[in-house]
Picture 1 (tube, rainbow, N blue to C red):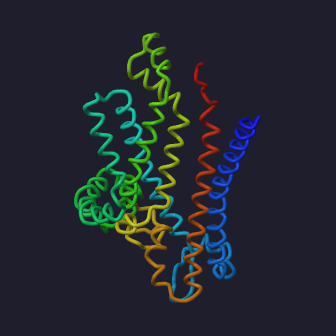
Picture 2 (picture 1 turned 30 degrees about the vertical axis):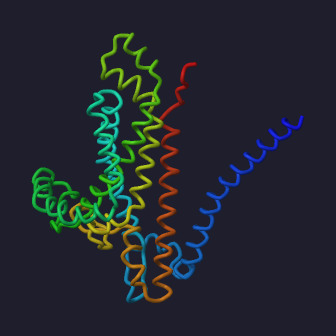
Picture 3 (picture 1 turned 120 degrees about the horizontal axis):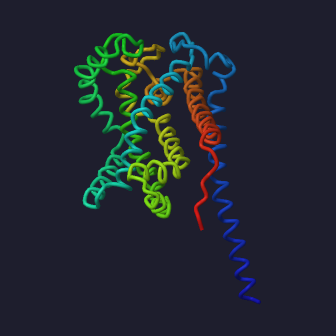
Length: 311
């Protein structure tokens, strides 16, 4: 009886300990929201909802609007996903389904190494290597091929929205690849064997038995990458141009919410300026939450019912 009572005490203690750990995460989020709201109180009182729809950012005259930064954050993240998602999922498929062992291990090591590179190092590489290459080679090619589109028109400045999107793509490729690889590895071997037994080719097995089975997990990997893209700061700051404007051209300088905070917080003079930067942080948190909620709704709408593994 004493042993049984001790076992029940251990179960209860474990339950309450894990509950406390979970509540700590919730408490941290509440404290962050509270601090951001308190810090942005002056800007909220003065500008209200106009802060989200105004394009003016003039610290000298005390006029602040976040729309150019919201635009830059969303567009640079979209560019990053367009580049990173096909590369990441294709790499994950190759590593799990096709690569021999002697190729797989070095590739995994290099992917993990890329994930470990500090963002400021990627920013330095971007500003001294990638941006000149874009300016001298890629941008002229894109303008020659697609110059009839507004996206590929305008002056070739060097630091630009396209550069920001590419550097973010480089940073999220390891995240999406690693998570996608683990998800594909978790697909039961029975799925593959059944497809081969029906006469499917390797590509058909990968497409029908593997990717279709793992589509929800792969979508979750993309959402993790998107979360990193929305909040990336230093590397983007160094290559995007840091100009608060809204333009259709990918070759024009732009700015993001996170880069604005990093660039201007130490230079903020006056309570209103500091409060506006706090509100930028609050907006960034709100954009991240809304994008993730929207992604979850898309997942429930289009992914269909979950596939249950066979017992």
